[in-house]
Length: 250
Length: 322
Image 1: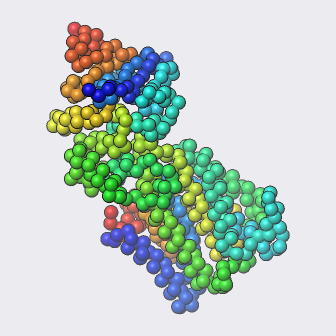
Image 2: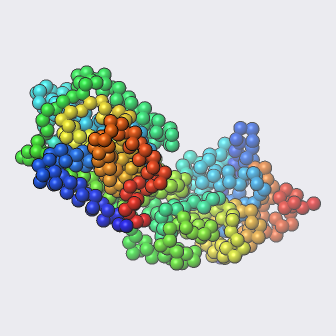
Image 3: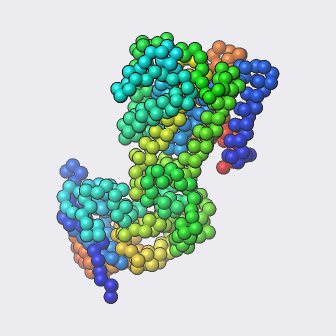
């Protein structure tokens, strides 16, 4: 069995906005080929945590480790270059470009300004086949020439995921990818994420409990900025603490 | 409806034909109008790079136009009167060579764009508009008080600069020089817009946060576009000095910045030669309405309001299919 490697490690993360504590001594680890889900009621601090991991926000205290290296001092852009790729709560794509062009943007992102200026925005054969491979993986192959703004909500979410995958992430941070999807689209995305988690670790923030229970290898529960429980799906299902805080148990 | 390539070709050939008609019927004023269209078109297309493709509404682009104008005019002025300019590292006697004066105009405009852009691009929206306006007004008032070079009255250069052995005083010759500059600028801008850089710039305009999540630095992308745009606007300014053989603080004023924005909106932003059509419509309206009424700007305003309301893609949107 392959050795499990720590890809992302948070230790003692604290964050306050004025008097409001949004993260209180948060520690968690995401290991290779694992989908680690973070659940919690609205306002628990989930998106703030993903922002601190991606570098959009800096924690007041604590350490963010990515592939065994401390990245607290690194900017959001530098963390992207280290392979920490995120998706957003609201679909974040370039609406005026085609699906293919959106993915090509993600493929071509690691270029200097000079190289960007002197190269035409077109794919060579290896880039084309890589983009089509991703389009196939996400069942978007028939939509390559479609303008992104005209896609359905579900396809926009898939496109955002495709862009993230095109950047060959070391870890994927997904912020509520199931938001607004219907039952059929959710089922397809669950199958897709099941196949993706075999090749890369995923840190998932999600409200859709059916999706979380179907996908997660480990779940952490956040309530008022604090992790109140962490463990396997079964452990979380049985936890009285979680039921009281989140699932509305007696 | 036309493809954008065909539209570009038609507008460029149309301006050339207009100038040739002026030559054939011996009406040099037609050629001068065509030259003015070309020069303002160059400046408009340059502004369009950041406004139409980068989403940055610069209300201070007259600064680069004026800096280009003043640099070329000062160089020509010193070449004429033989007075040396004492620069820090060397003395410069000025030049009557167009190529050198264009080069100097582009370099100085680039420098100004780099300094102004590096500060302005930290802001966005209305703050960006105001900060670029503030910088432009600073240079405007500096030029008003710069009595050595004419202050408020401006600076005359009397003759056009030289280019090889071409007689640049002939209107058609000078038009062809400006037209050649337009073709080169069109080629450069077309290249930039269709490069990886241009597409990331379009991405910044639409979704800056997404560009960051792709690992790109929007600040660097926007600043690069701003500097390219400033440099090309400076070239247009240098050509404008040769056209009029005169420069005044008006070239740095907020009205000139506003006119450049009007060219972009009138012609259609995010189209390579939209502002060139904008310049054509603007100059022709100025001439035609000016013959009918003294208050031609009022009617231009009415037309602009109608275009913004009913043709958000500008006049070029009527001809180009998406």
